[in-house]
Image (cartoon, rainbow, N blue to C red; front, side, top):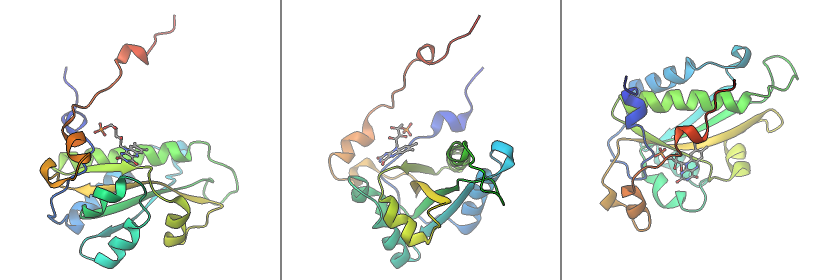
Length: 184
Ligand SMILES: Cc1cc2nc3c(=O)[nH]c(=O)nc-3n(C[C@H](O)[C@H](O)[C@H](O)COP(=O)(O)O)c2cc1C
């Protein structure tokens, strides 16, 4: 038995080639997100994105990034904000799993991107208020979850330090035994 190829090959690069991602490809990625499972099928996710074909909008969204993310993520040809709705549709009932479900949709999107030869890099490092304002969100009910850089991975050499060295580090994980336990 082997792990699915997209799971094995997915990673979070910081260097992206400038090659554009076509609208058809993007729609296929969002289609992958669409089929994610969600609590009560509420599908709490929604996405806003910019591409380098629209440099002003792309730069405005990139302005929301914070810290080290500002050094590399604006160069990605696509920036995406994953957002979620906190209440079940048509109600004021809080959906305790809203962010879980946005995460599930994001992973579905990421794996589809990997299968197409692209990669994406999710980021928590952005200004939540600035992003919500830019997107015109109703902050009582809607919230940005992650920003994502998306594109075809580029050369580590294109990055400034310390990102160049980080790009080349081996990916690590805890051992499965450390987080799984059979209850008897
Ligand atoms: C919710 C979330 C927030 C993250 N925030 C950042 C971030 O702000 N900046 C960054 O460089 N990486 C960020 N990452 C990427 C993680 O550091 C990365 O997924 C992790 O180190 C595992 O590496 P891999 O995705 O290459 O397997 C984030 C990932 C997730 C899922």
